[in-house]
Image (tube, rainbow, N blue to C red; front, side):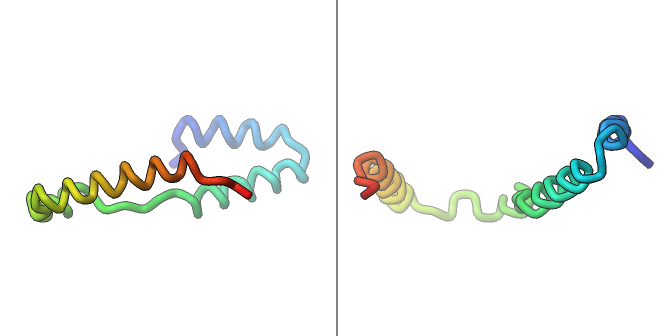
Length: 76
């Protein structure tokens, strides 16, 4: 069963010459492969509270330090 957006895409696709239809197909495939796959939050709930406050602070500091360094790196 097609959803309205699928119907709209198909209608627009029909108007294009075959070469452009191939480009659309390649683009759609690339998008499908690049879509990040994650884990539902409910599967991670058991991890809540497992990082100590001290470790969390160390991670925050490391992230801040890394972000500061990235802005000052020379691209040569």
